[in-house]
Length: 465
Ligand SMILES: [Zn+2]
Image (cartoon, rainbow, N blue to C red; front, side, top):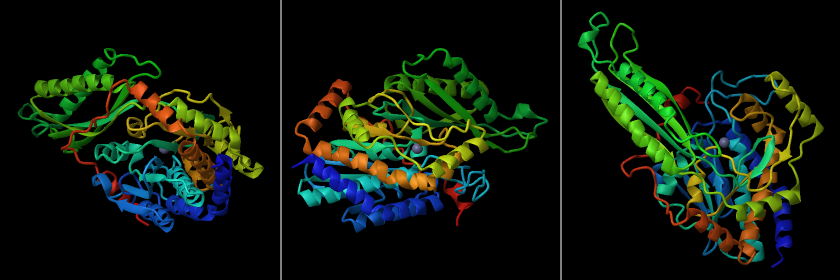
């Protein structure tokens, strides 16, 4: 089978079928949903997949907004990864001036409406190529909720949903520099809930302050900072905030206080060592204040294992298409946005980093990478730093809409290379085995912990349309 012919077919298919996917992305843009509450998005995305002959399973891994769409049978099993959650506070119209749809409401400030639909179109284009040219294999499109809270894939991996995958082709738009095939840090999110005893503020000796405990734990964690390894490619670091302190009145000694930690570490090993010591900080704070503490792990991820073999495949397909293009009018829109956001109005700047560049953001796609080779295409498409209202403004614009097909082609073509080039998949998998060096995947989330399906439920209720 001639690979170039299959790729040409994919290109034409993506162009001819773009409207269905743009509509899907715009529907998700106009109905932004926070992590674990993405019911409308899941319906829209799975409706499209079902129309193209995929078998849909929703509610997987104990999460109502997680799904797997499957097509075909046998090997290889090629996976595409779909995300669709938005971010709090980033509501914005497609306008160059800051103009939220809902003041303080959620919005697609990370383009997940575009990236989810782009990955979906890639999987579906690949499926039509499979049928047209008669090659075999299985396509799995994973619908992964709550990416912004690093939840979906961690629980899907724990449920064994990634056990049989052979490769994952993925993407995420970024700012400035086109990157392919990076690693990422291990990550955790964990609460410590302190319980004390209330007393009137004028007789505090009768109370035991949960807030004192939480503050003391924060202080202990600060002391700990200099005693953790600094990290190689990016710093090992962590942040925390206080929440749920009450009663919310200074004249009562508080009996409930939580401190919420998130952290990023170069390796799982360093992170687990840190978490052990962080637990001790909590216990020490409780002991010192006469309170009790209950830890609650929300999620934990391994570091991502990069794959140069697969990244180079994706890089070749990217080179064949060149950088993402936008029109002069769109470039003006981007400059306006940048000006209004207080950035240098330079327009969309696109530079290219060498393939398989390593740096270290955090993403739950790391959980795929312990099961199969993963490549992530990160095209420069954002007008500025991510998680910002300017990103929401472009997520609903013609720039975002065009990005869907551009990414879909590069992802689907990379899948074609994997399926049809003899020995390529085996080479990528051998690289993964070598990098894992005998380590095997084991979920970092204990069995008794259930996914935080109620996260954001309350926040979403305020913005129901
Ligand atoms: Zn994102």
